Image (cartoon, rainbow, N blue to C red; front, side):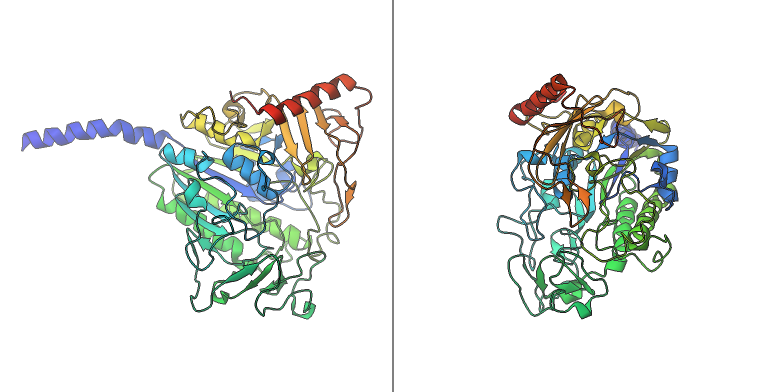
Length: 507
């Protein structure tokens, strides 16, 4: 009897270090907002809309003023962050249609796969837009794979693409949620399918009219990009999306509270169509875009409340950022332009979503980890492509020579322990024009195309001549200094060419 007790005690002592080690790893919650601009939050200077929940996270955390998404659009930014490789290195990583095959190779190390190997339970909730299924696209009425579970996530609950693209259903793990097998889903991005009305042919059925594009199948009174029929029992209701997603995030946290977890919460807000819940309608005074900002802020607050209630706040690294810069009219007549007033979604920056200017890629970036990250403001140059290598360092994991080759270990900067800038940051516009920032200088490579995207009224930054801006003196990129500084142009053009041809050397 006594020997049995002794053996149990010894076994417990042997297991204890592993339990302590597991608990010492912080939980990680990455809140990835959609189209959230540098000037959209009150913690970043907005005065016509208030975001108190995000502001509280910023006030107790580290707010970065020089952090960058790798691209000015969604799909490539997400690809780069999750793989640690610039999306422009791989063909087919532009804005994905809703029926695209999985874009991330299943044999490549990813952010969730790395954390899963380190003992984390990994979850993805929200907008995906990285493709699903094999070449040729997914089987919407069967098992939808490969997808998030095949690249390292333990659990997923997704909008397959974006809310303005079909199919307008939730996908949980490998299946559409609530699908009636007697009413199969059909999706086409090439030609009309089924008998559902379209916005183009039946504008009288719309509760939100389109301004450009977005004139195909109508779901919930909103016409989308692409054609869809069937699956009506599974169709989402736009006004409920934020609550549904936030509920899934909080459920995941509750379920996994006793072990290290990683939650990738990719919000729909503030992307179009902006259809916030009635609790927020009219509350901002700025129309649906402003109301969607309030809804995003509420969702962040609900996640933080869950961490507080479960006494996980001090054990959790929370990162809040965005996939690209802002856009006001992105395809729907939602009064976003008319009610914008003096609010400047990109703050002092030039351009916005899709653009080669910094308004497209310099984004809010807030890091919160009580007791580990000191509250304050940092102007340290960061790139989201470094998330993989930095979190690998945080969790004590080593990457192989061929893993995440563009991702550098910026953990000390991320946690505010160093103010050393990244050696350089590369940004990608929607037409694949690349820019490079090194120190205070930003170089935009020559490219063709229109100067202003008239659909969204955003300056593109495209110019057949090289552009050079001193961001420390000219954050708005107003004065091209290329002619006065040919040696800087040459240096940065050479560096950009080298990175393109040779790749990065991870440190």
